[in-house]
Image (cartoon, rainbow, N blue to C red; front, top):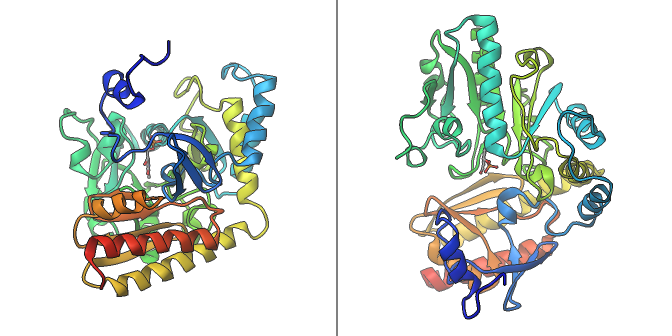
Length: 407
Ligand SMILES: Cc1ncc(COP(=O)(O)O)c(C=O)c1O
């Protein structure tokens, strides 16, 4: 029997799953179904999903082209290995390359793995060209790059590192949006600068154009590689296919994951042709990386994003959403510190805890995310409608009125 009699699923979760997510039945619904921007729990309650699988569900839930692509590939074969050629993997790499400034791709299974691959490639390439001592990477404070040992060390937030020491050497930190701070960390061991063009987990902070342009210059002047972590802000989230397109700055290495697989796990690391020569056969690999089912799903996602006018619509709906959040800020001026973001990655920073607002929204049928205790983050599907945005805003306003009182 799958579930012990008399026990709820939540009780069994507590018994059998290591508590890393701190779920509890009051705050975390048991999801049984999804369609478009909506999710349903086991009691039949409907939620407007503005968490979007944490920037994964670019086309919401059960997007028909992704479902068909998965079904078609599963019926052919699910997995072989990277000992053999498979068409979806090559087609996906070609599509990513043809639509980006990068030339070559490596596939893995998550954002952390994509960043791990980027870190390894940056070191290998730089050691080959600059000597054994070229291995240090400068990252930003408040960044988030993953949970493996190297990527949590790259992550410029101590809370993710505590208790896991000794951390791998070779990382330094500088202030986001502060070129001088990055400049001051460059030394003879530096091989790369790694940055999110829009910081996600750190609190939804878009980079300034002059900062990213300055980083590009700094890298060029010092023979450093510029790595953009677009795991969260890539794949159309900001209203361009890749966030760097807003800035007129091209990276040497870029990492992707989250939305790329339409809900299936995938990561990708792309790089310039010359940089790709840093890896030789055997230097890096992944058993599941480039799995045909996942790559077929990702191709369907890319096709959706590349539809004529789709990304312009993302930008327009994002701008509309942001404008309405600005109005909420005015309405609750004593409670809201700032609203910010780009496209459909938006944040509303409160002066106090956002957990009560998040709870009230959930009770009223809207799922939103709260990061760092005070920042409400909105990551709706990229095909969210204006009406769905209006519904979400109405719930949010009611929740804020309930928690803060009518302003
Ligand atoms: C910018 C960024 N990089 C890397 C990661 C890690 O991705 P994953 O959880 O797929 O390992 C995340 C996850 O939130 C992220 O936002």
